Length: 77
Image: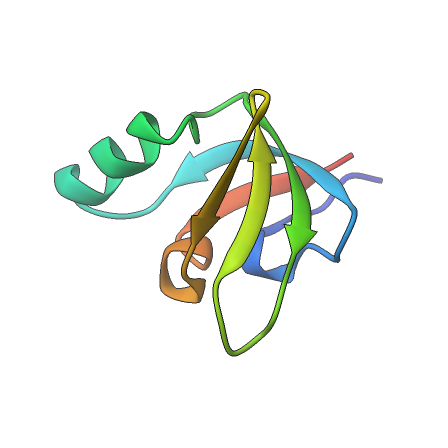
């Protein structure tokens, strides 16, 4: 069964598919610029509940804060 959750809940080393982004125009545009668009596959490279996450997205590594990660909804693979 596939579960929908926020990106901040994905475990280290796991992958997920971006399903939706909850936020204003500026947040959505910033995430689009980073490659975090609906349908994109993301893999968690480094995660710390108190600090930023390092993700692999479309062949690049990016870093986002927990606040952003909580606004990105994904479905696990």
